[in-house]
Image 1 (cartoon, protein in one colour):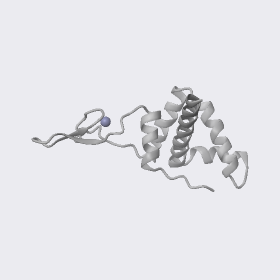
Image 2 (cartoon, protein in one colour; image 1 turned 60 degrees about the horizontal axis):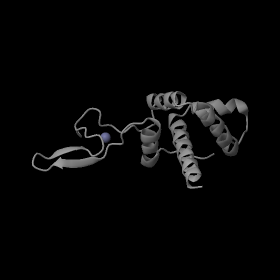
Image 3 (cartoon, protein in one colour; image 1 turned 135 degrees about the horizontal axis):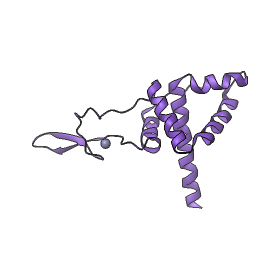
Image 4 (cartoon, rainbow, N blue to C red; image 1 turned 180 degrees about the vertical axis):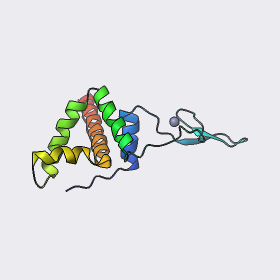
Length: 129
Ligand SMILES: [Zn+2]
């Protein structure tokens, strides 16, 4: 079985490409007052909104599922996961597919991030033809 580990790179893909949220990056905008903010959306580093989702919790998984559904990507994602599972599984028992897909928040989110990356690569390819 493959291991599914959430990385900062994958978390950024989910944040920007799926959730359409800012992946905050710091910039010192005023050296005199040492004002530090996000160089993209300009919120203060001290804002309570300054948080990178880790995509390892049930609420993060729910947010990812919600966006996949809202963006009309759910069917394609689920078929893609099924193909991954077929390749990855040792038992091949269909009854184990849904627990494999849903019962580990981190694995679910890693799959969603890899799915988004593949979609982006495919669209870049079709642009270059
Ligand atoms: Zn930001």
